[in-house]
Length: 449
Ligand SMILES: C[S@@+](CC[C@H](N)C(=O)[O-])C[C@H]1O[C@@H](n2cnc3c(N)ncnc32)[C@H](O)[C@@H]1O
View 1 (spheres, rainbow, N blue to C red):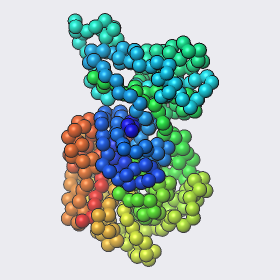
View 2: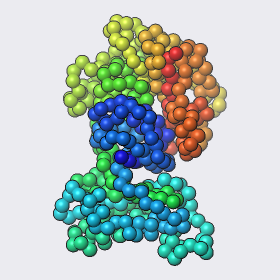
View 3: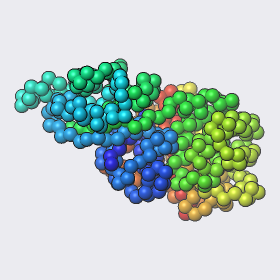
View 4: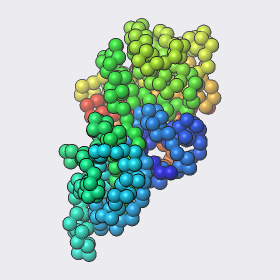
């Protein structure tokens, strides 16, 4: 079976999370624990082949970095000079549409059409060449007209059989439908979203199985009783990605020793971990208590799955010993230092880094007291964003190595070599940033020796 995963905006983290989850053994998800067979990937989408069917619904809920999960239906050859719609001219016959894309639905068909690019060079306008055939020359290079052309082709094929059809197309020069559009138009309930995955010499046709529940992520972020704009909160999706990078299995206990108002704790509970949160600030722990009480009711979390305490992270081992908990991993967004509206002076950054390094060092020393061998610390470090490609990061993470922790590659070097589009730092960590933020998050994984 072949599946395609539409990646989130920070595609490097999406891929890191996806591979970490897909390589676990989990019968409910349909995962055997075997290495993943990646067929192809781009910064938009990753295609894999599996021996067994996956439980797409359950996987979608688990993955913070995946926007849609698609089932790949067919692979179609294409000449490099051909446009995508030209190569599909004879493919969407009524019988194929009925059997592969619309078999579960009768009545007025609603369908959406998305195009994803597997080879980014398709987005560049090619030089016209004299040996292009007519159909090719007319269309090639105008990739943004493809969703409409292909959508109309499918619509015609269906209406020719007497079917009543409504077509939903991407807007504003976009090639694909946002998950919100798929959901609001009930495409998966009343028809289908058909996706075309375009490479230079072939095309994959695919059908959307699930889309990310954007409303639920919004609820988990904005409807909580307590928010803390001053300290900042990690987006639930990023918390989920970090938890999935912890190497833990359901039922394991994870500690967040800088838990703030509890975002990582709540996301950990949804992923079926036991969670312990601590923070030096009493008000933050009060906020966490209120938020988790709300969360527990809203998401039907069984009692006794989490604990919250006021504690300095540099003294947290006392708390762990007192509770006799066995901590499998630490997942945390430690304080990132002051927040800025404009890029700070170099000496200010140097001072912030020096202060934070002291705190990180003391905390890692403390974690060593209870973290098992191979136990991971997945954490956010500050990365000052100069522009889209340049960040000022902590100059060295040697402090962790000196304390007996290895920095783990967030993506294997082999894969990083193969997929040049991945955006990794020189030390093979990845950055989660937003255009409007000066202090971005560098996501690093440490493993205790
Ligand atoms: C960026 S906030 C974490 C926000 C959290 N991830 C959330 O989404 O709510 C960092 C937290 O670290 C806490 N903190 C700072 N120094 C600490 C220390 N030495 N020990 C424990 N917590 C500390 C702050 O009180 C703050 O709540």
